[in-house]
Length: 251
Image (cartoon, rainbow, N blue to C red; front, side, top):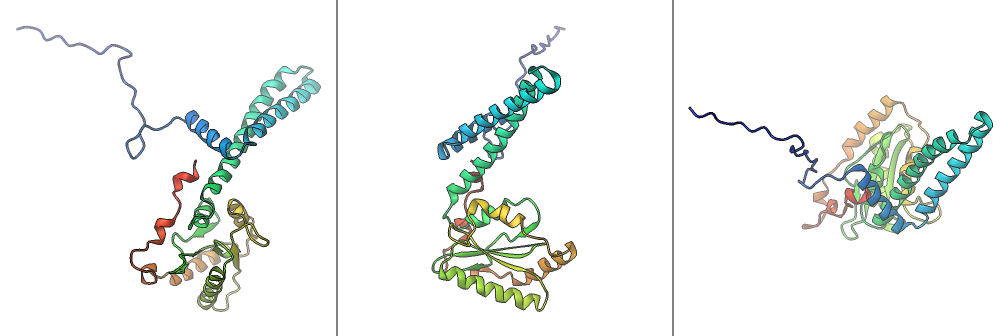
């Protein structure tokens, strides 16, 4: 019988498995993602690069001074300052990229909800608007947490103000006489308004006035206020389609 020769694949002929996104496209590397985020942010905000370079240089200078005074040698300070400077520069890039992303969706319906959903913890954000005007399609969003209840309107128009007052009455009716803070927040650049990119930090800085159990009970009661938006919206209008693309937030 003839022997069947088995050929072993040569070393290095193995193909590396490529990481793919859920849609089948090739997943970008971390460095490439950072470069693309930097390019987009620099186009929107020209001060990004100067701030990053300034942070690196300042950290190096400070590191050299400290290293010279303590160790009588500048070399340790150069490397340590460079590492710290790069870290600070990445933090600056992340902050400016987030602000640029908010600037892209500013003025769109649902932009406030996208900003609220970027809050990592401390608030339970309703996924859908709690009030919506059928004609203007203006929406009102709500969140609950240990700071109480936050109602967020996307502008200071009379329609938005009426929706805020209507929702406040609904909340008070459900909570009855409970001493739960109800905050009315208007997104905008005017006096007494909160800029879109500052909304997450503004809500996170609110003073906590409820215990975890009390906050959970408030969230449970608020679920009774949830109503079907389809009943109050004209046919063919889907308010959730007007929500901004979450991928756009990441640049």
